[in-house]
Amino acid sequence: MLKFVKNHMETIAGIEIYPIISLTIFFTFFVVLFWWVFTAKKEYISSVSELPLDN
Image (cartoon, rainbow, N blue to C red; front, side, top):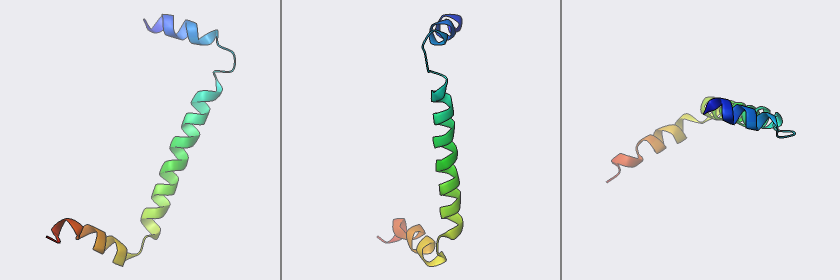
């Protein structure tokens, strides 16, 4: 099954750009998330962490 899919995908022109785009989106998302986590204010983090307990 994998040989069929791989052979079929090799015949499509320009398909090699999609893995690069996917990797770029994945890497960018996690870099932004990492940056947001380390730059978030402590007050905001503590207020959001207490939200489930506000009942």
